[in-house]
Length: 504
View 1 (tube, rainbow, N blue to C red):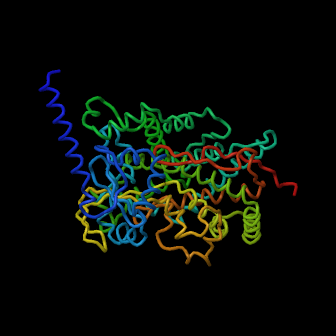
View 2: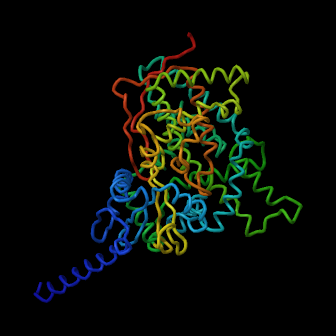
View 3: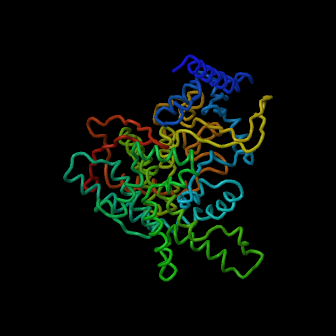
């Protein structure tokens, strides 16, 4: 190249670097601390992948003011990390109208099943759908689904005990995953797939494919979200190709339900809600066409969301809880005594008894403190907002994140934070937990709507498993290794020794 060309290239590089420096002066010009960043990328190389994100959040939290708040950059776009409970309460709860949305995910016309999910809705669409979905997870509705979950838990325990007779070590992470899969198939799709006994069932194979990530699939998702118009033209989609299988299955099940008997499952509850909106004779109670957003396609989307939100998350929570109880035999024995006392009182394992079990609840809460499935939370600022107690105003579009994993282990809020101490969450001790330092299901109105269902699943399984067997860590698996992946975290392996208690 000629000297003039090299000079031009040099000028372009210099101007780009100067522009990047200017854009990355946003927080420093406002007196807000910021962790070290790279030109052009900002902190994206640290925040894009979850396996780096949790360590980065911890560094920002303890070393750069993140325990109050600190500034971050995604490319050149300013973001905010907030770790102060009072600020979080003000921003995400009291001023929820300013932070009601999440970071937008740009999708193509081929991703309608995904885009119609509750978690991706914003504004009025989110409010309408949330108001419809929330009653579906009331305690009364959970009682209706209790028998279905109860049966799947029985199947799981029977399968584990059968394995224990021939195998010295049981892969509980795998078995819990099969249980949650069978439960979702039953409660969201009305399907008995029996994945515990049949690893080759079509439903389980489709779910495994749905959650299988490769470098190519991740790159495709990134491309679609960055350039949805180009992706549309190229007939690309963000969601897995197997999404079509679940859509067809759900639509077929909906058609069958309208002609047949009910099961009392999640799908029945949504169809019941839909029919109430359509059939009521009171015009004052009948939703307008614009308000009645629960059409068949929206129901399908919530069924698929059930898989995304409930499959790996509940299996991980169960895996961690079983591992921690295996590691702490005193807590395990105390929990077993509580369960036996409740059975003696209620005559059997009942919804009321399981939900009343205080130490069981405390064990699960402490598990989710140590291993929150969501490492961080994100909300997007929707209009100019002054950070309380400061003169700093953040503009619309600013993503505000909360470092859940780090706050759950901050010794400022938790004595001996690395220790498993369920007593923290007993009724007499809960007042000692500062508000919004414990957030396994999110914060404020956008917290997880299905948390009651997830807790019911977890409590039923642990109750039945501890009644049937004593749990011990398998040799070589005395410690759990956390795998931080694409959008979530889970244990790499949980392998236990199960000793049946029938002969005791």
